[in-house]
Image (cartoon, rainbow, N blue to C red; front, side, top):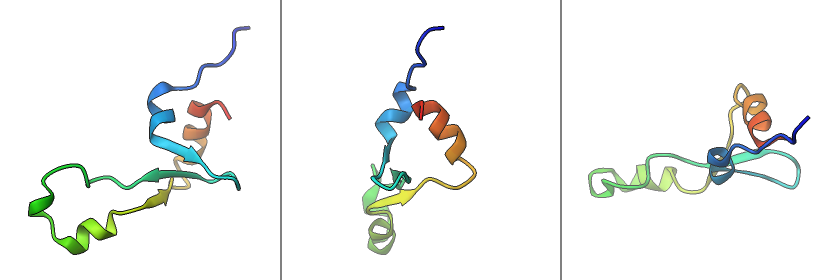
Length: 64
């Protein structure tokens, strides 16, 4: 049986923390920032945890 390959798209988008949580950057902060309120762009800063429903699928894609 061949080795399972990591999905190259997901490995660029998520990170696994030391405690095993899967985190990602929030979406919507790449372009058209002049048209978005500063409050909104600040809210989109930082990282967020992957939703509970998506965790099994993401883990499978990462091969963990």
